[in-house]
Structures are given as C-alpha cells and as structure tokens.
Image (tube, rainbow, N blue to C red):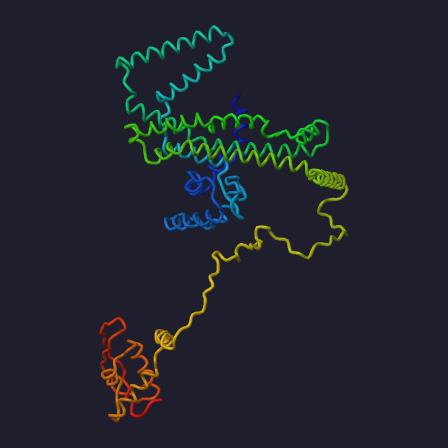
Length: 482
C-alpha cells in the first residue's frame, strides 16, 4: 500500500473507528478511567442505576481534585452510549437496563493500559510459543504424509531424550524468572479475551440484523433464507462466526479438558515463583477458566436468543407487515424525490396534518406501573387482642405522659401543713417517681397556678437510679391546686 492510499485509509479510520475517536476525546483520561474502573474488571455489565450512582461518586471526587466536569453521570452515560463507547441492553433479571463497554471501548482501554504499564514484548517464552505454533502449522499443513510422520518421529525422539535427561537429573525445572515471564505472557493473551468476546457478540448482532434484512427481500435468493428458516435451520449457528465460536466453546465447556485446565492452574498457583505476581494477577489466573465459561455461556445464550427470535419473526408472519411498511416508505421517498424537482422542501403548502393531542415525549421518561412495588415484602402478622389490667394500662401511660394527678395530690398534701410551698419543697417530701418528668410537671403546674419565686436548687433521683440536681426558676404554691 502506498503512503497516499494508507493516508486516505487512516483518515477514514480516524472518522469512523470508535476506539480512535474515544482516544481523541477531550475528556478521554477521565472517561477511560471511570469506565475501566467499573466495567473493565471482573464485572463487565452493571445495571444503569447502579452505574449512575458509582460514576456520580467518582465525579464528585474528581471535581474536588480540580477536574472540570459539569455534567451528571446519567448525562455522560447518554453521551457515551450515543458515541458508541457504551452498549445498553435490557436487564435479564429486572425491569431496568444494563450498560457494558463496547468492543471499541475495550480496545481503547486495553491500549492505554499497555501504554501505562508496558510489558516486555521480546521474551523467550513468547518467541518459543511463536516458534512452536509455526512448527506445528508447518507439520500439519504438509501434504506429504511421509514428511509429517518423519517430523513427528523427530519430536518423539526429542521427548524421549528429555525424559531420560530428567531421570538422570540433568534437566532441572525452569527457573523462577522464566516461569514468571511465561505466566505473564499467558495473562497478557488472556486479558485480550474480553474484547474478543465483545467483538464476537457484536458480530452475531450484526449477523442477526443482516438475516432479518435479507428476510425482507423478495427475490429468489432471499426466499431461500425463508425456506431454510421454516425448515428449522439455525442460520446463525451455521454461519462462519457461529461455527468458529462453537468450536471454541466446545474446548472450554468440555468436562475432561476443563478439568485438565483447572488442574494445571492449581499446580501453577502452588509453585514458589507465583509469589512474584501481584494479587490481581493471581486472582485473574485463578478465575481464568470460570471467566471463560461465563463469557462463553453468555455468547451461547445470545446465539440461542437470536436464533429463536429470527425463527419466531418468520413463523409469526411479522416480516410481512415489515415488508409492507418498507414498501410504503420506499414509495414515499420515491414520490418525494420526484416532487423535489418541481417543489422545494421549504415551500409552504396548503396541506394541514391533524396531529394527535397526546404530547410527544421520550418513552424513557415514562414511569411504568410496577405491581410488585405495592406488594408487601413480608406476610402480615395478625396479633390477637390480649386482656390487660388497669394497673398495666396505668404503668404504660406513666411511661409516655406526666402523672399530673399524682403531682396534684402531693402539692395539696403539703399545703395541709404549711401556707406555701415551693417546687423544691414538694420534691424533698415526695420523691420524683418519674424522674425529670415529675420536675417538669411541677414547674408547669407552678407556672399555671403558682406565684413566681426566687430560683432554687433542686435534686431528684431519675428512673435510672442516678441522682441529679438543677437550678430552676421556682414557683410557690399558696393555695389548693386543681
């Protein structure tokens, strides 16, 4: 490719590729950091409301450190979804929606992570892996059977010689430095798999849309697609992408190979050199097979859903309605194009279109009725009414209200012996049975039926058996209180 042709190709890629556009965004450091922190780890898909809450917390922290971020998490996620950085899907276990990174966003985040923490590329283990794969390809693709047999016999002789060397003690295990190098090369290849799974899913989604578009066509070639679907042929599984993924999933989900894979990981984690890896690397290696199975299961569910939806789309005759709509739209566009030669689009016409009185607004702004929100989370417990005594009711009332009847009796009892008495005098003879509530009750009675007096110091014993004292604006009772 010449420099001119490559320049044109890269210019077009600069405008069209989402990953490159993401790296060129003004707030790319913040955007990639926030999205990678929440959607780039083990958790690849999050419900929208949870993601909004997490990103809002991050935005507050970033603003406190000088970043100018004026939007909300919901607004930013809407912009990122429109730009192709996020993919929104309906939640499988709830009525909401989920967000996940698009394949291009995963590629951009992976590229920046490699820039921040570059790995040693020219390693012995990587070169050995390339040489081994190349040698195997050369042997497997040789059309001469005798040559393939000869090379396999050479490999067998090398393996026998290595076994004899191990038995003689002349072949020590790999040293720690090279073992760590190999593990990190394995992890580097495994870390690329999330973006691979995302691309596979995007490819299946594009294939599903392409098959639905082909169903709407009406010539003989497209009618063959309808015939195959009516016969029950799974067009998605039979595609190149479907066959490739089926082969990969077969390796991952095979019980025997999966157990061997798990055993190899367990043995590697027991080696001494594993301590040179970080905690995140050890956790990633430990969960590698589980992650591969989970991602493979998700893609398999996607294939199954698409295949069932495509078959239902055809068998329910929905495509006939879409064909009619497509034909009408094309007819309207053709008539508009023909009319545009004589009438300009901005010319005023006398046509009046009667619109519905219902205001147009986004379906996302509607709040749907959720019957489950009004269901009691627990069964209602019915308590039988029990018979209580007057003493129990009186004790219950004393816990919540001041017993003014008792205080009135106490004051009147004091006035039988003296002409006047203060609050402190009443408390000296009749203890505060309700603690501070008794003191407050006497003050309220004095303010209503007594005469103001000099402040005095009073003491009482609270309901917790602790003696307390206070200086209060006292009152004198000079006559019978009611």
